[in-house]
Amino acid sequence: MPKLWSTPIYRLQANSGKQVTVDVTTSLNAALKAKKAIRKVVIPFFKSRNVSKVVDFGAGALRHAFPLLKEGIQVCAVEFEKTFKGEVCAKKLVQASKDANFSALIWPDQFLADNRKFDAALLCYVLQVMPLESERKVALKQLANRIRNDGFLVYMSRYNQALPDDRYHRVEDGAYRYPDREMHSFYREFTTEETHEMFKKHGFQHIRSLGVRGTEQFFVYIKGRGTWI
Image (cartoon, rainbow, N blue to C red; front, top):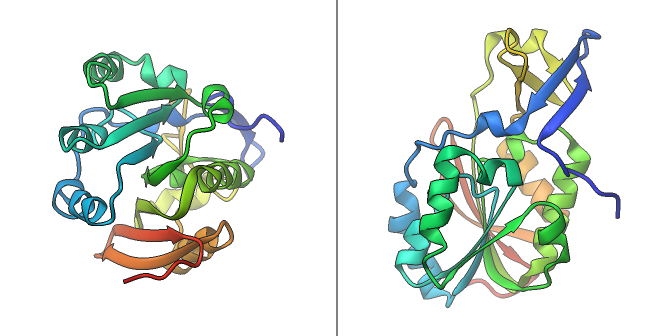
């Protein structure tokens, strides 16, 4: 398998011909708190389905890892080394590492070399900031390989967040943001139908929508063809 997504820095050519540099870590807001739905919906759901091992892919500043750890759920956080070394993220990583149920893997090398299986995955606000479709496919394939049959994937994203100027800043299948900066971020929206089809191709069935209100997309998928009750 080719070594993809090995750095958060992408040097791309926009549709206009302009050379742009995208740093996907600029999309991270380390000050954000965990979504209430993690505590009120996801954790009760996980407990009802005997989920005890979760991989948090694109974990950022671990805002969703801490509520899971508090409930005794094992969490493996996966991120770029550059992200983990950020000031806020580094402090959170030290804090989380004091919990015996926490572990962390650097993407891509450590994660690809790890052979653990998990009961579920969190994929929160990640795919829409990945500039290359080929790398999104790799990420989903690798997650599918690590989730047990009848395991779950919790997906969070947003929709209707396109900006009027995005049409002038097309790159790959999305748009680069902050055109006046040296380092740009990337954004690509997926409709609900696109999202379900994308996961279906990797063996995930949509089983529940926890929120589709204007800008929020909050879906639960099950791996394989297990019976859902």
